[in-house]
Image (cartoon, rainbow, N blue to C red):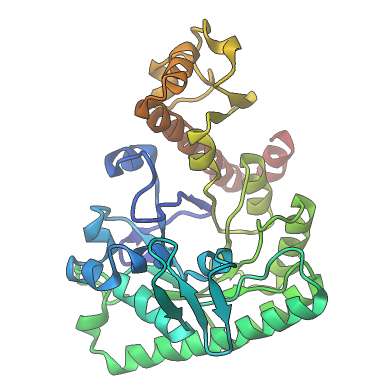
Length: 361
C-alpha cells in the first residue's frame, strides 16, 4: 500500500495513537519496533489541540514528529460512545465534549473537513456505528444512514479536490503528487444480509479502500467473525480492506488469513497498562505474586528489548510500585508481540504456508 509518507507492507497491524501519541511509547521506540503506520483519532484531536492548530504546525506527521503513514478515523465511533451526550439526525451528530461539556456538531462534511485539515495519509468517511445489541430495523436504519453519509463524504472529498489547488491540498511536502486517500466504511450491525448490502452500496460509491466498522462493540467474538466473513468477499481485493477495532493476537492471524489487509486495536496498549501481557506461552498477568522471584524473561521466545533485558520479577516490582516505567515496558513488549505476529503472517504468506501458520497459532 503506497502513501505519501511511504509504503506499507500488508497485512499490517496499526497501533492506536489516539491523541497523536501511542500511550507510554515515544516515536523513536515505535521506529525501532518496526511500526509502519499509526492511527490517530479525529474526534480527540478536533477537541484538543484543535484541527487548525495541527494544520498550522504542518499536519499530524510534523506535529508528532512521525514521518511514516498515519490513518485518522472519522470520529464516528467516539461520537457513538458518547450515548449520553449526543443526538443523531440525518444532517449529522450534535454532541457535547467529554472534556468540558461544550457543544459541537459533526456532519460528514464537517468530519471530512477536520480530517483533511489534520493531513493524515488515509482518512475515513463519517459513519454511524451501530450499537450492540440492535434490533434488525434499527440496524437497517443505521446502515442506510451510513450509506447516505458515505455518499456525502465522498462528494465533499471530491469537491474539495476540485476546488483546491494541488499544492494547497497535498498531505506531504516531499514533492509527491499523491494526496489523501478516502476509505468507506461498511455497517449493518450483526445481520449478515445487511452487511452484504452495505458492502455493495459502499463499493458502488467508490473509495480508495474499504473498512468494516461497528465491530468489537460488545458482541460475541463468533459474531464478529461471522460479519467479517460475510463482508470480505464483496470488497475489492485490489483495494485495502480494513477491519476496525480488532483484536487479540490469535484473531489478527485469523483475519489476515481471510484477506484482511489492515487492523487496529487498543488491546495491546490498554492491556499493558493493566499488567496483562501477551507471550508465546499465552497471556501473563504480571501482577501475580508467583513472578516475584522469577528471574526469567517475560517471553523466552520474544526478541524485544524488554524481554532481552528485564526479568519477570523486575517487571512485577515496577507494576506493584506503580512506576511509570511499568507502563512503558509492558506496552513496548505487547506492541512488539503484535507486530512480530504480523511479520510472521506476512512471511508465511510469502512462502505459501499461511494455512499451517494459522493452525499453529
